[in-house]
Structures are given as structure tokens and as C-alpha cells.
Length: 204
Image (cartoon, rainbow, N blue to C red; front, side):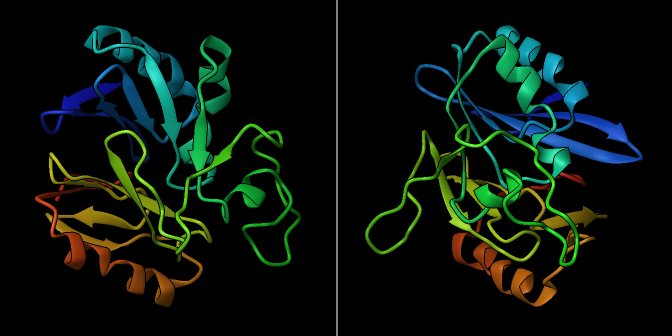
């Protein structure tokens, strides 16, 4: 696994399995937030990197969405250290096997019920900051997809809202509602980050 510091507070962990898969470690005041867990084979490398950074313990996990290449390392990480884990409330039933990501297909259970907590929302339904990250609801690729913005570093951790190629953002493949995903992509115009990080591609 390749580990790269992409900003003052954020490190990317990447493996190649036909295409790149990135997860991110975010240094907080007293520990680390992990954004997505990648595939199961990444869990050991992620935990080793947390130790090597010497920035405190793994405090929490936040998930952009519940597809297997984003939560595959979750159970193995929990075996070593059970930490609070969060996703959008709309996404949780799909992860727990109550609803199916694919219409007409039987739901698949990726995590046991009760283990994933919903990201906090205010009375207007706006997602609340968690650690140093501000989540934004960006559906399309999945029903409850979110991105996480690190305001201090001006880095947007975009999950599968995009992929990238030759320095340009592109629509992520296997997006069932491309129209909604395109609408969600306006978050880049709103936030104007210095850098956009995607799971399957390079920094833009």
C-alpha cells in the first residue's frame, strides 16, 4: 500500500486492483479520522499507518457510502479496534441489507444492524461537522453518498462523486442516477477547494 501526504493534515492510502482505490487518514487534535476503509486487504496497512503517523489513536471512521470497495476493510479494522463509524442515514439501510443498491436485486448485507451511526444533522437537515471534516450530501452514485471537506487544508474528499483522468474530474462509472450525481457535483463550485481527492483516480 502506498501512503502519500496530500496536505498538512491528510494522508492518502492507495492500492491498485485493476484500478486505484484510495482511503484517507485525517489528523485531528487528539487522534485520526479514517475516511472509507477500502477493501479488506487494506485494513492491516491502514492500521499500521495510523501507528506510524504517531498522531494519536484512530478516533472514528466516516464513510462516503456503503459499496464494498469503500467498507470492505471495516470488519477487520473493528477486530483490532472498535471505533464509532458514521454514514448518512439514507445510506445505512442499504449497508445493512434492508434495501438493495440495484433495483430488482436481492439486498446484500455488508454490516450488522446497529453498528453504523447516522451523521449528525441540524433542524434544517444540514449535516454537522465531525472532527475537522464537514460532510455534504451528494447523492447519485449511491442514495446516501456524502463527501467530506477539510476547510483548513481546502481538500475535498469526494469518494465516488467523481473519478479523474489526466487532471480532470469525470463522472464515476456504475452511477445509477447520473442526473442527480451531476447536480451533486456543483459542490465543487460551491466550496472551490484547492484539491479534490477521488477514490478511483488521482488528485485534481
